[in-house]
Structures are given as C-alpha cells and as structure tokens.
Image (cartoon, rainbow, N blue to C red; front, side):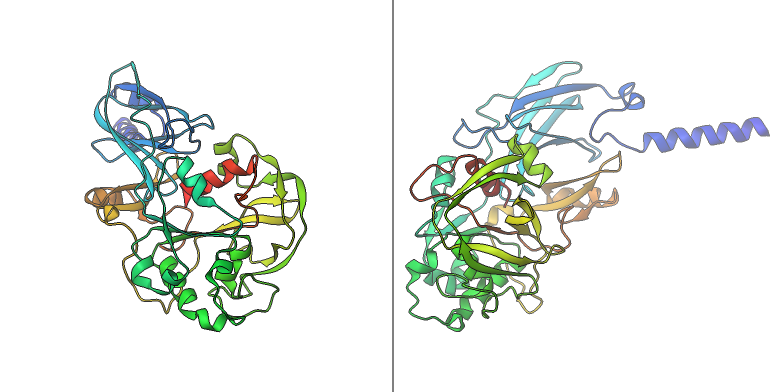
Length: 394
C-alpha cells in the first residue's frame, strides 16, 4: 500500500510540473519533449534606422502559452520558442497603438534571423496633435516614420472629431495659438469634458509644459495652484509657472523599464526659456514619476484616471476592434501585458489571464505630462530619446 501511495504522489507531482506551460523559457522537463529554436532580430521604428528598446517580443503556441522577451536598448532580441510555424509579435506599450506581426518558422536547435524590413514597428493608432508655440512633438513623430494629423483647439470642443483618434498630443503653447479671448477657463468646459471622456474610454494624451492648463484649468497656462476648471482637481496635481531658464544636470530616469529601453538612467535637461510649468504637488498614488531631478518630478504619467460621469463610447481606430489588451500570467509567476486577437481570449482567460494592462486598475488611457519638451528651435539632447519612448508607449 505504501508503494502505491508513493507512486500516486509521484504521478501527481509530474502532472503539476507539466501544467506549467512554456512561458519565458523552456525548463528542463519541457526541453525533453518540446523541440525549440531561437528567433533573433532587431526592432526598428518605421524609419528603419531608429532602434527600439523595451519592445515586447513574443510568440503564442497552440496551447496559448506565451514565450516572450524584450528588445535591448540597441533594438536587438533573442527569443526561444517552440518548433514550427508561428507568428512573431512585436509591440510597445500595451500593443494597441504600435505593433507588428510576422509569420515565421522556428526550426529545432536552429536560429532564425528576422530581416530588418520585417521587424519595423507599425503604427496602428490614429494620432492627432494641436500645434504649439514652443513644442513640436510632431517633428519627432515624423522623424520616426509615423504620421500625425493636425487638429485645432476648436476641434477639441467636438467629441466626434477627437474620438476617431487613439492619441492626442497637446503641445506647449497650443492654448496661446487658440486665442480663446478669455482669462476664465469656464468657457472651455467642453474641452475639459471631452478630454475627460476621451481618456476614460481608452484614449491617451500627452501634455507638455504650459499645456498643463488642459489638465487643471487656466488660459494660456496654469499660473498657480488654485485655478479651477480642468478635469483634474488639485488633490491630484497642481502647477506654477516659476521655472527658470537653466540646465538641469544629473536628472534621473526613475522608471526602470524606460531606463532599460533607453540604455541610460541619467541625463542633463535644458530648459531654454523661463516661466516653464513646475509641478508643485502631485498625488504619488495616482501618478508615476518617470523622470526627476532629486525629488522634483519632471515627467509623470497615470492610467488611473476615471470619470464616472463620462458616457461609454468608442474611441480610436477600427483596426483595434478585433484586438484586446490582456495581462498574461507566465509559468514562473510573472505577468506580461500583450495585445491579442479577441478570438483567443477564452483560452487565455482559462489560464487565469485578465483583461487590461498588468500595471493598470482601469481601462482608461494614459495621461503623460512633461515639463520639458521638443524645443521649437534647438537640440534637446538626450531628452529626445525619452520623448521617442513616450510616443511609442502611449
């Protein structure tokens, strides 16, 4: 009887080990029965010259197990995957805005190299920007090989117009150009309301320097804490225009994923004009600090914003109708955010995966705010790669 009992226990343990699947790497038990090969390549932006670090590279086998890795700062990657015909997925951010899918054949114990022409990151998102006086983020978007449509300040007052986009860039000084003719943000309630609804329903925004007024209220900028009118209240964030023209030395990229993707964690940032918008207060439970100087936040983001009064509506390009973002649980206990075809959801759900980003608690889009930006006239140094990273991860 004791021998039978030990045999049953041993069989149970073997079954438990084999149920782990094939995420991340192939363990010794799997390697005896699961032939694998290696996929290698380099991820580039659409321009074919800018390497992209921090991209998620993965394949999914017939049992909906995910094998994944991340591209290095020079864009290179090496992925172990099961033998056979499969699809190689390359994504940044949550995969909804930028992604590429490549049919590939993995050969046992061999390395398959992905041609550069195939590993360029495609733009899925529809991107809009509002022209600014001091920031030209659209120039960086174009240099990467992607496209963005200019919309006006007045367009922000029409939700049907902005809802067709996935990402909206609000350049510093764009409210200058709007010439609203008012010092009161009350006349812009439609803009604040539309941006609030846009984000709540999955759209993402980038706001730089004086464009803080889009978040908390103000005319050309948010002159001080206490102005009312934006969609973010002052328990979340407030600003003051008291920044001096100066060089900020030894700033830190405090987000480890960003630093790894960029290949550097410190930089000097030039503020070429005075009266730039400083962050006076922020809620650390709501915002994540991405770049800072000592304890001063210089770039922050959140995906926790929800307007419970906002209507539920469709935002973004129809190309994502058949795709969804999920948090996938790997065999080693980690998680990875990927975008998959909706037809595969039931199988992933059966594995314990859930809808949405692994880092988010809502289905809302991202809000990025940065005190520094693309200078309209001059070199921005190592701040440039940070802004490129932001574009691809919104």
